[in-house]
Image (cartoon, rainbow, N blue to C red; front, side):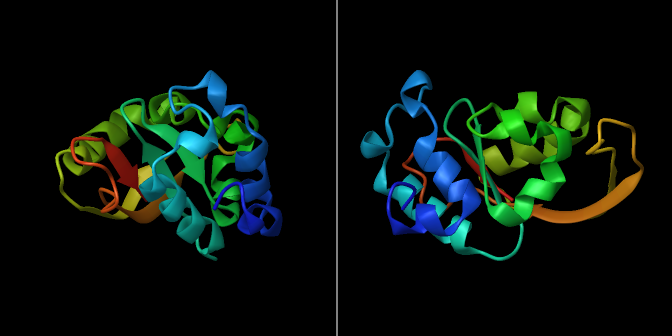
Length: 145
């Protein structure tokens, strides 16, 4: 769990535990749904990059392996809205996110995206999937990558 033993085992888990969630729509960790805490526990222990956008605002969570993909966004990404973190590629992502929020799964193969991880344009191709979290409470939006 984000505020349990796993948080001291991963850098991102420790940052989640220390973050001021009371200042967000999620509120304090103690009030989070079990489904979110369970999903984060699984995600944080995964050795491959994982990303979660949770709730109506699609607030961002990620694991240690995802951190390099954020690049210059890393300092402000945790708990920020998905569309704010990835503003420079949001036009390319929104159709995929919309399909996922509608309950579908998305597979993107060799999709050209300018992540600008260093702050400078970079031409790169990415393969990834988006899926709705199976643990989301009914009617709650979310997206796992």
